[in-house]
Length: 480
Image (tube, rainbow, N blue to C red):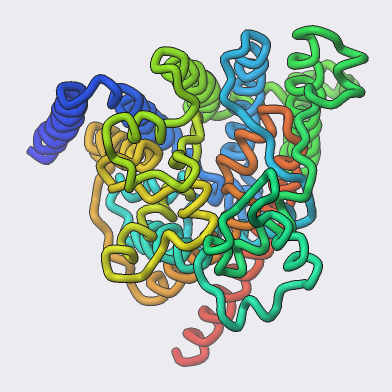
């Protein structure tokens, strides 16, 4: 009976999404752009739920239990996505753009890493877990990734007094009439000064676009050698080797020696061990492969949409449809063109606060860069909703959906973890997906810097949880 009920729910959700898509298309053909985001979100959600893909889970499994299954799956996805990204760049069908490179990325990654462990899910993991009915993830995503981020980018006051003078001076140069003009009324928060006075002054690096790589690897080869091989695949393989040596090799060598009757272990045996580690969980590895492929296909489709409609940003289509209040001063909205989390959640929080009278458009984040479209016209936000609904469909089909209200300290962990994830997302202009996964595969070395910070923060978070659990258990035993 329960299984039949879940199948009906899955069918109903899918039917509702199809109906929503048809309604959008009937209103205006331009909404095909938004519909594409919806269905790629659904695909991501289904794959994330089926493969249990979560960076927080990968860190917890690795550092707390010594199980590398999820970490290996993420690296497999990264390798495949880098190959597809290189093809897209070589055919001029990529929407990828690198991010400013600097120490802020490492620091932000560490904050995010601690937060995702406390919350029990990373940015993408929290969304698919909402689709499973996880109440703690709802807290993390709504109050941290949504409301928390919106407040974080708009607060000023005493925080502005803590800003370095060099940032303030550089920010002032970005105001009119400079070529990279920012209306002075949009520089009101500490985050505005941080962006215009620090981040925008940093270099954005994509290996294939550097002069050195372009000279050594001319033509399209630079995308496959610089971006794919040097920036993505070689580091990923080295990490796989380190994980194998640290967590798998000792037990595998003993088992392999018995299989060979005591014969010497050679390099071939080590390669077999690495391969067995990669294929230990066929489900996770398969989803890693599919996620990499779909992420690449997403970029291809969005680029095709831009070519079809003759635009570079969905804000141009909103303007053509008369929704000028949705876009930023430069006529754009947040439209990454690929898999991305957190910025659209900040828009959700900003939209809610704006409706309650908090002026949210007087800053760079909403007023200049991303706009603040109504929820039903926000393409990237629909992608996040799609992830939730896609995960819900898969969870229903596999009878894994169950609404779970957070209990006891989970309320605190969800709130604190979500806020830390939000804080860690904004200075780096992305999260575990946008600042790590997408950037690394696209040839941006800042992605590895964020990844290093994220793993370090996750390690600290896991150690904190171990300490907390042992302390709690000791108190309970003492009371007993």
